[in-house]
Image (cartoon, rainbow, N blue to C red; front, side):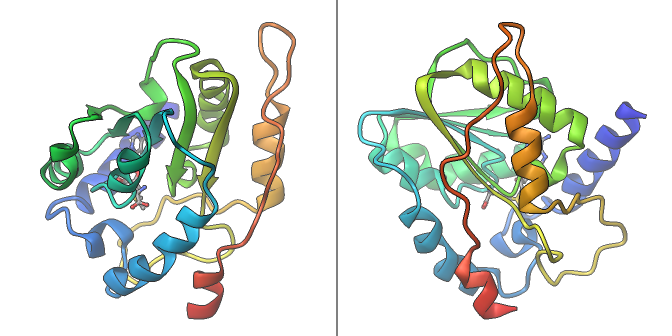
Length: 208
Ligand SMILES: C[S@@+](CC[C@H](N)C(=O)[O-])C[C@H]1O[C@@H](n2cnc3c(N)ncnc32)[C@H](O)[C@@H]1O
């Protein structure tokens, strides 16, 4: 069952990463316009990245990677679609402080306490509850003490206007995300993340 879900999610992204365009990746014919509006809004919510070691999960073609790399000391950009990784490298590789990693985040292993900040935009909705709980445990280990996770997901509506023969995306409420990310228990007996901020993305409220 778990394998079947993985195959479905992988197939979904294989079908939507052939040309590695922003429209294909955001599943929206107006993606270029939407991206121009929403990027500054998302970026305005991030903490100061000066000198930080950043992990970006589900980086896609790198809409955010360049910005993260401009401010942070080092960025590791992970995505499981090679076409997206190639496009990200083509656009942002010149910065010289980005490690591009082609990997499924559900199988990812990274050294403990090696990142100050984890950034993820529209990834968790492509993971099951069990996969997200397992990733949460791992992210807590990858972050250094005092580190932060920023994530953004579509909660109430299908994102994008592109026709989908099938749509395996999991739409969860903010309350469900809060529950999943705060309730995992670690071997040490500690609990999951503490939520310090939760917000709706105004660009999408305006557009929809
Ligand atoms: C909607 S796109 C968002 C891309 C980018 N974060 C952005 O906002 O422009 C979702 C991305 O997550 C990636 N993705 C989905 N599931 C993944 C997984 N299990 N491991 C790694 N990447 C994954 C897809 O390949 C795609 O690039």
